Structures are given as structure tokens and as C-alpha cells.
Length: 387
Image (cartoon, rainbow, N blue to C red; front, side, top):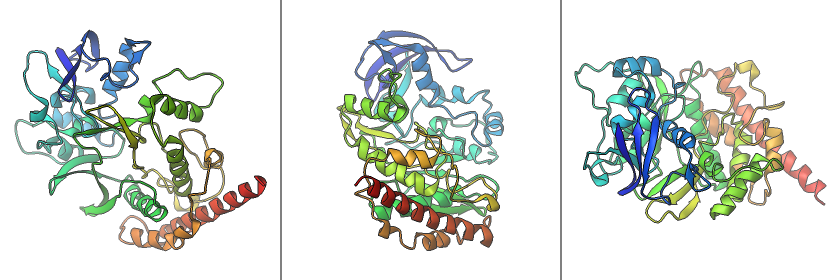
């Protein structure tokens, strides 16, 4: 079927979407190269493979918890086919697709100004809807990540509700811990709170993107230029940011890598950090505040394996945190005294959990306390060696 890719009210590109697979089968007339999704242009030409990576990357991943059952209830064969059911609209950016023969307008359909259906979100959360026709106009069609999540509107705010995973259901508590650490260290971040639904914990956060801004994930930043063989991925990312004129990238990485070290984040990939730009002028505003820190604090490990030493896995620049923390250029901003008592604050955060017993609570609180101490030792040793 023929569509026009739009950026807000601006036509960008004509394209054909295969109705059987959801992929972009053909690209047609180009209307605005400057508003093309970042990274899909290679030497001034559209790379259809990269365009498809961008397009299909908007869909719910096949690894999403409960996605098979949800697709059966939605009567959809693959999550990619959900994209056109909501015009490809999301709550992270301003891109969407309109059928070529349609005359619908951005202001009438975007999810920042208009209500959306909760049918998809409720089904993703395992609910059985006793109704005939389902309303698939939902930003849940374009949400990434493997944990159950759904968008809701509460008191006029767009909020994301996200689950934990078995057996400890720990990720929502980890999000609140990360928020507490960054609040104490005065690091720009997205605050998370807790809610409980049917005895299960969920994290809740406000959408930090508006109808006038958009999030550009780091993955698309690094696609803007070819990576030379003689530099690291870390340097390549900073080089891409520098070439694009994105401010504050180095300081941001110092903050993010430090926080990830403290909470032993195992899944800081290139799609859960990035940059915010003005969707009207395309000017870069700032690096995005830090968000999505749940896959941390030994979330999927047995209690006896909660250990704050050893080769703790990390992403995205090094495979272990002991190596990745060495990329931090400066700790002048870091105030270790601000983290005094963070272990007891974490104990209080965990106190309401029905899935985490006292032995695990104690192990986790000792773990975060020890990570703070280890970082302090590393900073002192590095300062001594620099003399």
C-alpha cells in the first residue's frame, strides 16, 4: 500500500509498505531530505535497508514478554503489522505515515494532543477484552523493549507504566533507586515512581518528549558517519555528536557510565540513551536525561549470586563495568558524600515488595553500598596515578 512519510505536517518521502510483512518495499518521491530520519541517508541517497531498520525498529520487538498471546488476541501475525494501524505514530518523535489517498492532518491524530485507545496496552498486560472491534490507535504499537509496558493518560499527562520480570519483579524498584542516585548527584534524569497492580510492582514515568521535541536514539546518531577501523565505538559516538553539533555529549557519558557502574546496569544499549532536538527547527537541544535503568542490580540473579565484585557485564562501549568506567574523563562533578545512606534508602524502596525477601533485600542493599565504596577507591587511585 502506498503511504507518505511525514515529519509533523511536513511530507518527507513516498513509500510502499508491504501489507504482508510490514516492511518498506519501495521508496518513491523525496520531498524533504533535511527531515529524513537520521542515519538513513548514505552519501546523500536513501539506504532502503537502513530505512527499514528505522521503520521496523519502531515496532514492538518479538522478544516482548507475552507478545505471542497478545498478537493472537489482536488477530495480527507480526508486531510490524501494527505500525500502520496507528499511522506509525509514537510518543517519542514526530514521524508518521499517511495513506497516499488520505487527507488526515497531524494535529488531528498525533498522540501528544489527542486521546488514544488503551486496547493494545491492556491486551499487552494480559487482559481479555470482551468486545468486538478493537481500536488499534495506540502508541503501544510503537513502544520498544522486552518488558511489558503500556502508555496511559493520567491527569492529562502521558505516562509509561512498565513491569518487572520473574522471579523477583525487581526492575521497577531499580528504576526508583537509579532516580534516587541521580537526584542526589544532581544528574538530569527521568524520575520514576512505583505503583502496584494486582500485587505486582510497576514503574511509572512521565513522557519527557512533547509535540515540539523528539528523542533521537544514540543508535541513529552513530549511523550518520562510517566508523573508522582505528577508533573505538566510544570515540566514534563522540565524533558523530561533535560533527552534528550536539552539545554536552562527553559530560553526559561521564554521568551515564558512572551511574551504570553504581547500579551494575547490564543493558545500556544504543536505543535507551540519546539526544533531544527541536522538532520544528531541527536544532539540537541537549542530551536526553538518563532513563531506563531497570535491567540492573542483579535483577535476574539468584540471591547468592548478588556480588559487587568480579567481571560484571556492561554495555555499550565495554563488556565489563571495571573497563567501561575507565572511559569517564572527569569525576570533578562526583560527590560521593551525597550517596551516604543510599543503601538504607534502597531498603525502604524495596520494603513493599512481595517478591523480594529479607535475605535478598539485605544482599542488594549491601551491593549498592559496596559499589559506592568501590567507585570511591577507583577515583582515589586514579587521582593518585595522575599526579
